[in-house]
Length: 246
Image 1 (cartoon, one colour):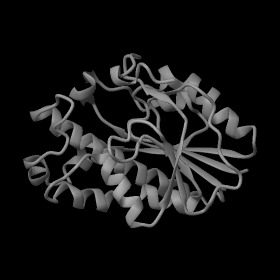
Image 2 (tube, rainbow, N blue to C red):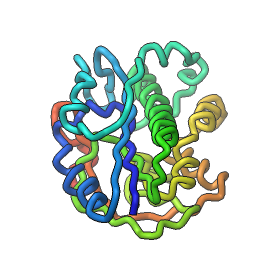
Image 3 (cartoon, helix red, strand yellow):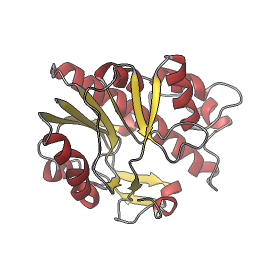
Image 4 (cartoon, rainbow, N blue to C red):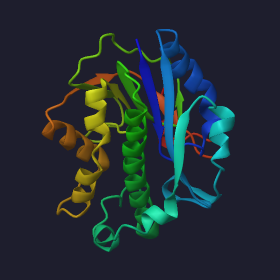
């Protein structure tokens, strides 16, 4: 089985704290079943601004990726430059991220981080596609996840099916980790235009619901998997909502 693992988001943020579980539960089991290549896309930024996670201060250098994940092929784009390309005023006016006690500037920062994550997923898939690597399975994951058990990937993987974690769907689908065929994961990853349309639509719901709506519209089958993990902050602490997982 030939597998591509794609990391997206702010990859360097917590990598030093979770790389052990990433290797033990994800990369090593996949490499044991055949050929494996790793790709990433991240953002360069001078400081962290994530009120929902209680994070602020200087950001980790992208060199952290080369240190902890030297086999990964990837790139880093300037976050502030990208943020300036979007008119946020209408999106902020009725911000759907005003939940879990986050309001005002904190909700606006959460919304920006969501859009950055979606575009990062699309860019790392572009990187994989341009490589010419003919994978049987593509895994798309955030890089701040502490996995608690080894991943089990069916071989062969159904072409029109996306596999997602069974928890934290919040009325939709967990959008932190997924795998499937290259075709299925291309559809999964290339949803930035759909998300940006959702930002300007009335009656907006949460990002998990949007992912579910997107996959349904594209007529993708979704299968739930028991694959628990915890989100880890830049300081190594576990996100409170995730402490009981695994």
